[in-house]
Amino acid sequence: MEIVYYPDPVLQRRAAPVDLAMEGLAEFVEEMKAAMKSANGVGLAAPQVGRSLRLFIASESGEVADAVAFINPELRTFGERVPFEEGCLSLPGVNGDVERPESVAVSWTDVHGKRHEEEFSKLMARIVQHEFDHLEGILFITRLTPADRIRVKPALDSFEEHYRSG
Image (cartoon, rainbow, N blue to C red; front, side, top):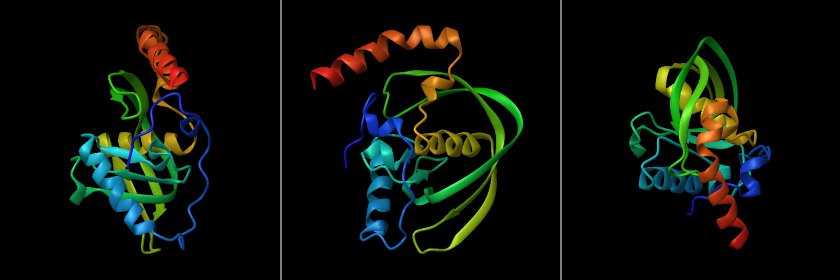
């Protein structure tokens, strides 16, 4: 399973809902968990592996055993907006401060079709919001401060040039 890099179009469009009867869904989730771990990440969304599906993995520890698969998630944010440095597996080496609400309430379905609802705060809330953005076709770089956008522009230009020369 390969991670897709910016500016691949799959990263910039809203993902389609997952059909829970999709053949190989559980295996796909396990492969995503392994890819996240292999890349030393704490989250990975299906668009980041080239599949435009409303599914992401989140693991506060970065360990596969702690990873939760969020299928067709819905979320509601609340709490104070706090800045925190973020990066992304689809933009290696690019990071910057992003302000996000400190808490999130999420409802989602797991690979067995069971519905869940839970509130998360701190790092897990941040991971969930970052990965949910991927499902909406939003990259964290659009949420950077103007100063950080200027700072990372050379790296983004490099990714774009590499993509064009393909």
